[in-house]
Length: 195
Image (tube, rainbow, N blue to C red):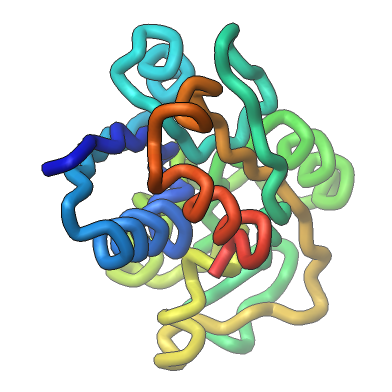
């Protein structure tokens, strides 16, 4: 290995973003070792501060000292269901998924008259697994459910509002000076961030 990339990624940003980025990085730089750490937003920031990770995908704009950020395209949160005829309100199979303060506020405002979800999850990946096994509906990132939509296992409830959640690529500033792969990788993200 000529060098190592220590990548931290929020659980919800791994499918469709972190995973694709890591695969592309390993293909483009076969001599590069990649160490991957998946965790919560708090974990990711901690790993950056401690030096355990060099780069990270996160929903937080908080940036530790000696680090910088590239703002990526927002995640689009869409209401998906295992049943294309599910109601938008009062769905007994609705699963609430934590997606940050702004989403929580906007969701509460739009669905103020709806019942409280019986099941809730702290991340979209686990909620998606639950819905695929048990049925139901939830707001999930479009990029994370793309395969399920294409395979017609899930359906977007098009009359429901959509929400957005910011996405950031955080990196240690020293990478610009010492890592051959960093410039190429950051260009990919700026050109086509969520594919």
